[in-house]
Length: 441
Image (tube, rainbow, N blue to C red):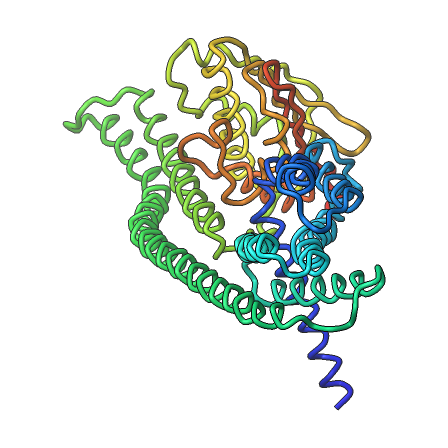
């Protein structure tokens, strides 16, 4: 029995942690405007309820605390990295204080007035919109309400539940239950859409892999028999048999074209794998990684990238620095560079000026690839979220592509890391750092 209780408790904690992470992820793109609303709204409504439409009770101190809690969200891009893991706990405390605790406390202190009944109802609706997991929602509501009652009693209130409060509780519960059901159904529909999209992509991948496999098998057969055919051609020509003339260069081209076809089929299979990985149903296989040289990857990427014009190509500056090797996949690395080039060229096109500078450097056993563009840059409020899955911005990940979230996943699978620094209106620089061969993991 104790083990069963322990396992159940662990599952509950795991579910709460997951719900908290989901809540933070859903709120992150809006934390800056939410911070503005909190910083401005808390003190502003003090004057509204204290001076314009006086209420029985107001508390400037509590409102300043509320404004202070929201203030750090205005500077989220400048949070030190060591603070970022605390964002989930801070978000939970923000929701707890600003919605169920504050509004329930003010409702009790104002004698269950109509104004605060309506305000508390609005707070409950906002809580349901911001917290879509019913378990976390219930925990916030129960904890915040309990703390509000304790604060009410500690400041001279009576331990008597007013009939008006009891009459309002079913309405609050109705809002929470209905909102949770709606949120659950919306999440279910979204998941079903993702599953359907993956099923379609998997079928398309299968249909594409079949002809690619045929092409690859054909290349294997040609690679095996082509030398014999060319040798037979040379013998026939020397014996004076009537055979069509074939220049030596064409014979070499026949041999090299097999390598190109095989490389293209491998590349196409990698693209299919990346699409499936980006859909979240396929994992990167680190066991297939090999020693990869960064300079070769950059050279291949610059050679194969589909530049739209010669002018666009001339904006690239490849300042070859110290080469380094890491354990990874050349094809995946090339596609990561493709994505960084695409973003950089988009920033330059948006600014109507600038260039892309690429260089490498070594730091002991580690190596770093730099990709810098002098285009529009990234707004500071957007910068913390550029790697978030499904996060969209008018200045990030324009058009089709695997996205920066996938780039981070790939680089991370190599044992490396990707960082970005940007000054809006001036530049954006991505730094990809990799451990040297033998230091992976």
